[in-house]
Length: 419
Image (cartoon, rainbow, N blue to C red):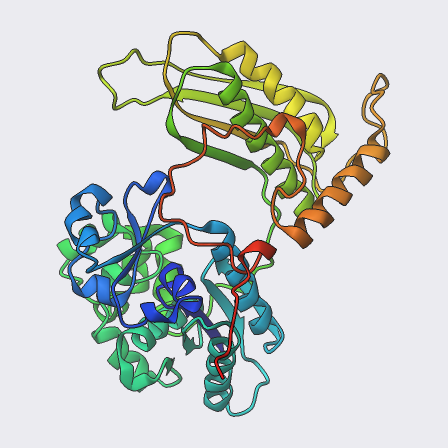
């Protein structure tokens, strides 16, 4: 049996963990630069606030205090996700982290599955403060279906199990085809044309018909909905490309501020490489103005550079990123966004790379390791390279940012008791 555990309204729930006064109140989280809504609590959804709604359209609601608004705090959300996944991993035979707030798990060999599932949900919620729902079924796709029911209907008490054909038929007849995992908007429109409205309608078509209309991928989904497992648990694969890209909080035209931003992006790529114990062979820098600003001249450019040796050294990545930035920067433009992409990633550095490589890589590896340990202990960027600077004119607009409660000593909550 497969399980799909999903954190309920994850970003909003993370904010509530450290401010219980938000419980039962509408909460929304905004995208980078406080642009639009990317997460909503159930109460915010009930008010009719749509996903992706621009923040300025909701200004009146925010000002009246009817909705509590937060800038996205990815450091906090990432750490809370790690805590959730760590608890799950300690209790199940196998875990596949699917996204920041979702994980597949196997329950093979576990007696009294329902009793265990309720214990798992209770343990995660109690241990992290994040409410979760768990769907259990013979296939991954059906586990996704079960999870939707666990979240939607309170009677399930956050656990829904589809373990018989009778339950499967009942669930699929109530499940819109467009909500099935792997069925996108285009395919939904096509299936609706053939009068397929629910997941059950889809399973009643023949295998040959599905194969002819949707190919192998569609056939696999069809089989999974009929109870035949086609998707196995997967190990987390190291990323082949890593990108750190941000829109600036304000438009920038001076080279120093943009160079500082690019240096921070390159350093971030280095951190991510070291976390997955890999090395990049090439690096790209991109720079662009705001394509929607018709009142100012437009410019976009990017350039790729081959690194002299595979590296995850932030100092070296910053060095080459700044060289590339120098090549593509142009005076007279107001830039809105920049980014650094590291590519051709390998799991290990070759024993011999370049005969003319004179960098003391062992020394710099020790330096990066020391920096990572200090920052892990005392907070991100507690220690950083000089090129990353302190000006930060480029920093994202995040006027409603909550503290990083779990990763910064200065943000630890003070608790006082009255006599």
